[in-house]
Length: 507
Image 1 (tube, rainbow, N blue to C red):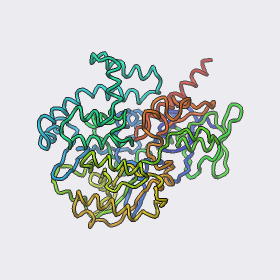
Image 2: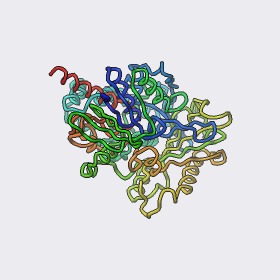
Image 3: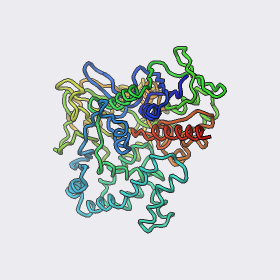
Image 4: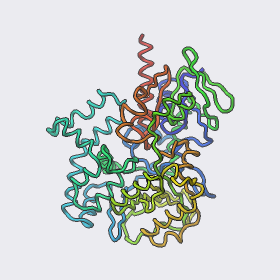
């Protein structure tokens, strides 16, 4: 009998398993896929070409301490620092966002004006303490006390009333940007960054997403050498060293509570008995396994989020403006907030956006080991793609059309890009659902909106990483603090389980 079975081998599940095994528990991870890591994995898509299946650039986990606490560098994880972390192309302008704030402000002053650059520097100073509070809240279970400890000092230090501070956090990204900056080019870039969590920048509560950009002025995003999946490869290695077990290609099909333990049935017909279960899979998948259709219907999964085009090329995108390090990090191709609003409007109508905003990454620019000489991998992410199309078409029906649309969209910003394309792979919302278990193709599992965050995530009564069922815990993007590569859910859930064990032992 195992002490803990972890359902799902994504990065949060592996993080939780490592902390539990390090505490001396007997842990087994069960993963339905043949590849470990879920959306944080890398596979060979074309001969000799390694391509990420989900994320490519890691931001949040570099601010958690998990990599250092588990000494993942000793397990082969080698991060390439990405600086500049973003370049925004819009017509004849290019804004360069570097690790150094002064360097970033110099770029803003050259494109916009000195007043806008000074406003950005002031924004960094004013919101940096708030970002600290957000990180503290993200790294703790979402109790009222924990949130109070994270945010209460802000008001005292700034001399602000709690209601005033709350209003700052609850406003929309657009409202914050309009109140802070004058230049529309900078506002468009920061709005597009804020939208990466899924919610459009005009929605209430999205202002803090703008401020997450400030994290990149403290430590640059990291790209694991060898691909995003090297993070989960390193976690699996560490787990093995700690005595844990990972089983791939054998997913969980049912969970049954038997007195004081759990019976976990797998696709192969095996049955594992465990004292406790940690679910790292999508909460909708967990409720399906439990047969809880009522609660499943209460989840805020949404109607979709985005899709990604993987492109094999013979050269990097030829942007017309020469910017140092332009291909190192994110290439933000959304020249106006009107484009964002139009794309979101198409999404609400159940249509693929006719003029999609783009986030382009070129991992081979900083890691040539991913592809043979003379070949590059270009990732094109586009937001607000509905899982189900209004006209009844399937995504397979429109795959070629949407592939061409995205290639043409990149080519408008980087003329000549289309002629560099060697091969393509489009991961539609349907593909993300089928391949990675992301219901509705939502890479955040659930909507990142106010009614599905903190103690409301994934559902009231299922927060703080505990389910109402004894011995069943949750982690992953379905729980606080949500999606993205952070590992915070896995670590916090493991600490909650261990705390419950200590209480039981004391009794």
